[in-house]
Length: 215
Image (tube, rainbow, N blue to C red; front, side):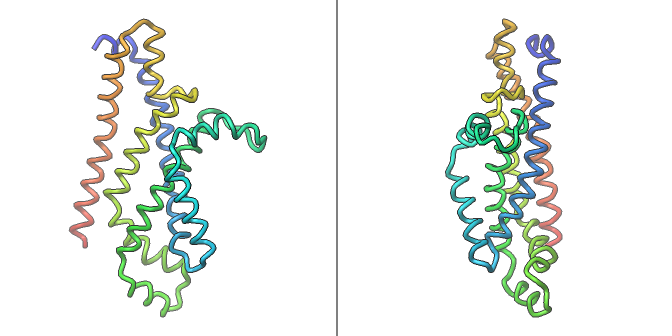
């Protein structure tokens, strides 16, 4: 307990950075993932091809390599300069959006085809059909895997510690420099991560229970 109380400011600051990293990445990943899912089910072959290529490449690329590209290789392109935190948000968002896309696409596939055909018969465009009829139903069925994807995102934020982002994963180095026990410190980090995941798990169960009753 002493390691935590003596370094409480350090834990609060680093976990605050972790939550900020998670919040930005989760919002961007959700928006990008839904957009990619729309591309994946688009009637236009080129759009489906672009969505499929993105998901295939990103899902089969280690997250660490995505970080390496944005932190070390991207600056040489001299397009837009990123701070380490922004580069970490971009890397996490690009990586997670591919998984969000596949979760949303699996939800779209659970919606009966007849509803899409009825929508087209009523004169709705593809975008109107997806936004008004298919996606609202699909999102209900993807709550459990979607929450699991965001739990994985929360844990993946620790990778940013290796690229100069001072979040929870970097607490070990700070404790080592202060002469504290890194083993005890890492046990506290693991315990706090469990506490952070618990609200997401609770939200998952509440939404799953409510929407399963509604259906």
